Amino acid sequence: MAERVRKLNEEPVKQDGEYVLYWAQRNRRVDSNHALLYAAALANERGLPVLTYEGLTCTYPYASDRIHTFMLQAVPGTARRLKAHGVGYVFDLSRSKADAGDALHRLAARAAAVVTDDYPLSAVPRRFDVACYAVDSSCIVPMNTFPKREYAAYTIRPKIHRALPDHFHAAEPLKVKRKWSGGISVEVTEKNIPELVASCEIDHSVQPVIGAQGGRVEAERRLERFLEDRLRRYASERNEPSNHATSGMSPYLHFGQMSSLEIALAARAYASDEFLEELIVRRELAFNFVRSVDNYETLEALPNWARATLKAHDDDPRSPCYTRERMESAATYDPLWNATQKELLLRGIIHGYYRMYWGKKIIEWSPTHQEALSTMIYLNDRYALDGRDPNGYTNILWCFGLHDRPWFNRPIFGQIRYMSLEGMKRKTDTVAYIQEIDQL
Ligand SMILES: Cc1cc2nc3c(=O)[nH]c(=O)nc-3n(C[C@H](O)[C@H](O)[C@H](O)COP(=O)(O)OP(=O)(O)OC[C@H]3O[C@@H](n4cnc5c(N)ncnc54)[C@H](O)[C@@H]3O)c2cc1C
Image (cartoon, rainbow, N blue to C red):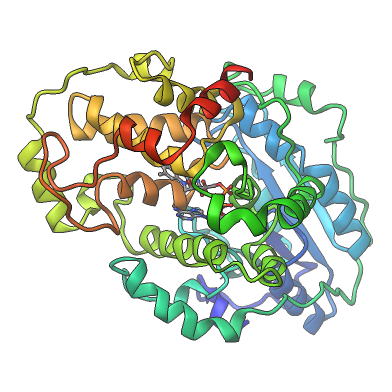
């Protein structure tokens, strides 16, 4: 556990604190949560109960009905699970942008210590005057193991494989010695979510995804389906979108409703090296990247060769050249690309293989590389259920050469890897995919 924990300030644990507060920012789950376990250990040593605080504001970028609904759907289940473990729970929904809310600080003022998630995109709480810890429960091999920026998958892979045996075991079960005696009243129920979402000052034009359901129970159901029906086909069929051989777990991972450790342990029994490569090596490389640089949303974060080749080709003519609005409304000349964009609009996801194609074409059709980057981040973060994630920023920059190597020189792309419609037609059943999306 120690290698997962960072102390964020110099304050001591308060002797007269009433509880240990766990602030669930990213890993919004009860099971397999090292931060919650650390809070429980601190509390158990002092004979205190644990209180979990989870907030949902209207101020996060691209706050919408889609994202709010998915997050709220998890809340009743979290409340039930925490109650069963004897842990207190405050779920704090702010309805307007002006409602900054001071519930977290009020609760922290009465706590012996605050524990939160160590997550590269999260706010680091500096203002608490009690001991404050960040605990990494996002990665299987703790992020602290790799203090420097890794150049590519081939540099981090052997290090991960070396460290994995020390960390590839289930998190211990949550046990709190002193149960929470205060009540737990959470206003979110399965039924009132649409009403709550409608009352929030967020973007109501991005609708919830029909058929997508947030929360732990659904995450477990999806994992089960993946293990039973898809995982054995993953190695050979994962790059054939219409065969549905991938897990669909990324939104649940993004909101921390299930841990990558739980998924990897469940999948290990099926010996799928290809799946574990994506889930552990690629995902943890993305966390390493976002944690190591300040400018993970900019072209400045690219390796020198990629920046140089893009600069040399930024003025190349684009034909066609589309506006962001045209791309957003899936109205390009390319039926496959339009289908990927429609999948994003309607399902809140694009199949992983076509997602690369989606990104590469945005580079080809945008007036500048900078505009291509902004458009990709905007579309991905606005519509994807797994958007605003280390994987998102890393893979968007992958489209511009990050963690990749130089290829042949060509217009617009320079030496950045190119993807063509002909290539997609050769390698995948584009007709079946386009038909499937048309029927949505
Ligand atoms: C332009 C672009 C944007 C992307 N944006 C996001 C995003 O916002 N959020 C996001 O989670 N992923 C993003 N990805 C990475 C990848 O496409 C998704 O993680 C994957 O398709 C999710 O589907 P799945 O859960 O069925 O994946 P599976 O194939 O079942 O893989 C299991 C898990 O492994 C991880 N994984 C898979 N592929 C990658 C990868 N290339 N890099 C890092 N981790 C990976 C994910 O956590 C995924 O859920 C993006 C890729 C591209 C090319």
